[in-house]
Length: 96
Image (cartoon, rainbow, N blue to C red; front, side, top):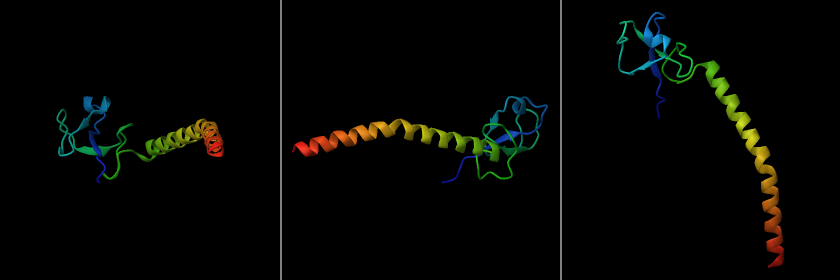
């Protein structure tokens, strides 16, 4: 499965660059100013070297950190619940 990288205008004077608007992947030139389009980060609009990724290194690192924090928080929240469920299962099994 190919990651769908976005193309964007890199001309700092262009409206499409200022508002971080993405163009169609098939387009080669900006529909507003006519500048060459490049693959850009989906979040911060930084120019990417190739179209293999959607995010730049910085945005990918932030996303990975957020995912890790979410997993740790979920683990802390589910820990007591899992312990309670296993205790209930043990009691039910013992009664049978």
